[in-house]
Image (cartoon, rainbow, N blue to C red; front, side):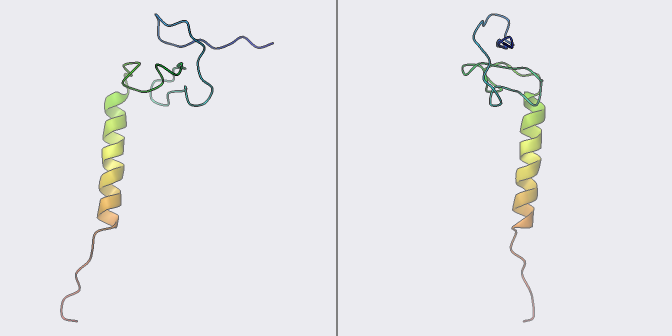
Length: 71
């Protein structure tokens, strides 16, 4: 039987959630209480915010209405 993965937060002994508890930014495995970036004080939080901002800006730019003059 495989060993259960524990939450990567040092003071927490809870079992880490499969898939939804894995952090793509710091590589840690977290329980349901610490799975959000803010909850486990992720080192990659600023990178995550920057990436989300860039994705939103790109999407908004793509959906921008184009004005055709002289039609």
